[in-house]
Figure (tube, one colour):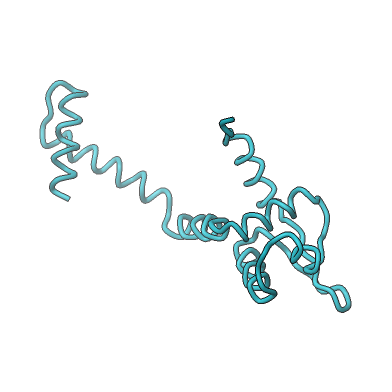
Length: 133
């Protein structure tokens, strides 16, 4: 941390035109308060959601379910992604755990739909990512 503190001191010196140890300590306290306000439980929960989307298979499943705007059967989803049945089941389980997908049994069939959380995340990503052509 001494290297980080030294860099912070140099930054504050540039910003304030002079920097005292109290300035560095005050800023470190402010940053510590910001970090504490995030809460480790909240960060962990958000990372779980982002991790669930961090695979092409899982992200494709979420995108398809959001676009469908209805429930889809596992047999339909299996046609969308090129993975084994167990791979598909595992991917869907991770998405359910992250709160991005909900599943229900319908007789012999298992159906899934995107949650509001998934819709919100896909909407934000669609609005923030541009494709260079």
